[in-house]
Length: 372
Image 1 (cartoon, rainbow, N blue to C red):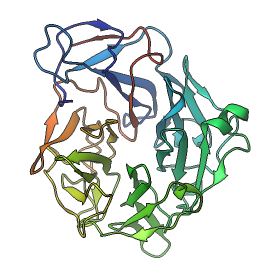
Image 2 (spheres, rainbow, N blue to C red; image 1 turned 45 degrees about the horizontal axis):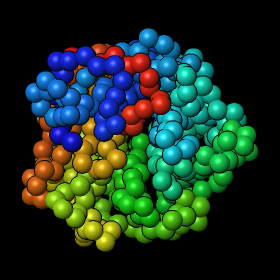
Image 3 (spheres, rainbow, N blue to C red; image 1 turned 90 degrees about the horizontal axis):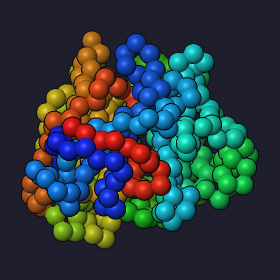
């Protein structure tokens, strides 16, 4: 899949090798957002395509892409409930009128609350899906009193199907330290990496983290053990996260942009941590290609095949809150060459602290009309 360019055709529905980039909730600088933006990543199989991997802005006539509440600083993942049925789950964050949120929302015909609540409010938490998309692990964040958390919780689709979240969220492996606005990524089926983030020190105030930790094991969310990994060069929070294939066998863990400790400003610096085909992380992070702009609080999502990483929206200036409407895509076409590409398609309005994910075709978003 190549990075995104603007479409010049209209489509209704998706082909079997196409997906949807969904960017949901977030803040426009004045308040929280309930609408969701959707972009089709179109297949080169379509006729009259000028280039493969074209992006097309999608519209929907129903309320399917609207959350019942205005929400930002939440976390979310795509959950697999059956072989051909995936649905987004968005949890935590801050509600426009009611403050910190303990509820999770599942997108069916619209975004609907799942029964029960999380064990804690979580603002700026990070999550990951495990066990082939059937388990969600939610970690860290701030509670309603601005206390940073080292606690985690998890649930799976079988527990949710029984009685929603009520009593079904289980205590998970604690973080090595209390963190918020950190990154948590699956490198492969049994390896998880945690990196960056922030915490509140009662004596010195906000602290930023440059450390990373790695955990191996199929049940790491239940009883795993964190092992210190190599530190990043730059302490950062609110950074873009993802894993992208590099060459034939290796992958890179990506830390893109964020708030830097050195200047307390948004940064355009990108770091990579190389991981080989056996899941072994290299001894140090190294600089990757810079973002086209300084950026923080953008939402990020990797494709299922880890060929591309998308960053959407966010803010350019920490001092002024200047927004970004852009969507950027990272690919490593060769083992020695990676680049960011700016899509010709943009978010229709500013959106930061949002949730992004890639949705498979069929069954979930029907009746989409996508055009350039």
